[in-house]
Length: 350
Image 1 (cartoon, helix red, strand yellow):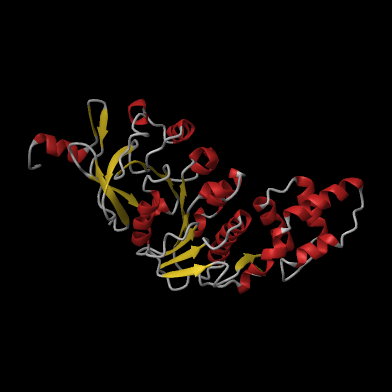
Image 2 (cartoon, one colour):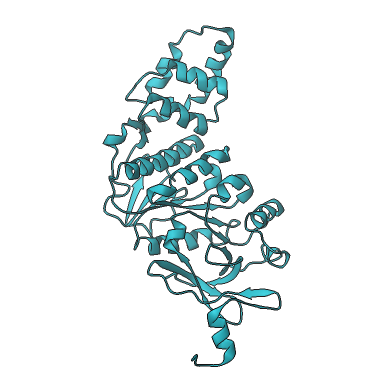
C-alpha cells in the first residue's frame, strides 16, 4: 500500500498535465548524470541529463551575454568525473577551469593528423572553402611532405596543363598565401605519432586559440584537434570517454555538413561533443539534429528562434519565452523529457 496523499502517489507514478503543462515524473537517479537545475513549476523537481546522452552530443545555444560559456564551464567541471575533457577555447576563457592549457601558436604547433596526403586537401578544402577546381588542382600537385610550408613550393612549381588551370592556380596560391607567414605553426603528423597530450591524464585540457589572429588558422586548429581526438579514440590509445567542448561552432566552417558528419561519425567512439553557438541558424538543421541534448538560453534573432523552435518542436507558449529567458534560466530538451522544459539552472551543476 502506498503512503502519503493521493496527489503525491500519482505524481510519483506518472507524468501529469495541469493547465496544458506537462510535469515530469521523478526519474530513478542514474549513477552517471548531471543535475542542471530545477523545473520552473510548482513541483520544483530536479532536472538532470545522463552522461550517456551527452556522449550522443549536446547543443548549447544563446545570444552573446546569455551565459553559454558560464554554463559550459560548469558542465566541463562535472564531465571530468566521467572522462577526459578537451575545450576548443576560441577566446581563451577557460584558463580558470582547465587543469592544463595548451596555447596554440605559442606552446605548441597545430598538429594536423594525416594518414594520406589527400587528408590535407580535404582539410584545406573545408578551412579555405576551396572550389571544386581548386581542390582538384591541389590534389593533383600534392605529394607527401612533412611540412605544410612545402605545399606552396609544390604548387608554384606546377606547370598548368590546361587554360583553366592557370587561373585556378593563381587563385589557389592567393588562398594559401597565409602559409608563407604561418606555415611554421603547422605540423603534419602521421596518426601513429600523434601526441596524446590532449587526452592523457584525464581532467580538462584547454586548447587556447586566442593567440591565433587569422580565422583560417583557428578553423584549421579546431578541425585538426577534432580529427586528433577521433584518431586517438579509433586506435584505442586512450581507454576512456572523451568530451570535446566546441566554442563558436558556427565559425568552424561555412559548410554545416562538415560538423554534422563529424557528429554522426564519432558517436560510436565514446566521444561526446558539446557544441556551443550564438547562431543556430548558421549551424544548420543537420548538425543540430545530430545532438541528443539541447540547452537553449535567450535568443534575439527571429531566424535563430525559428530554427531552434523547429529543431526541438517547441510549443507556441514556450516559443514566446525564447527572447525573455533570464540569465539563470534555460529551456532544456533531452531524451529523458517528454517535451522541452523551462529550468532554473543551479549556480553550480552537480
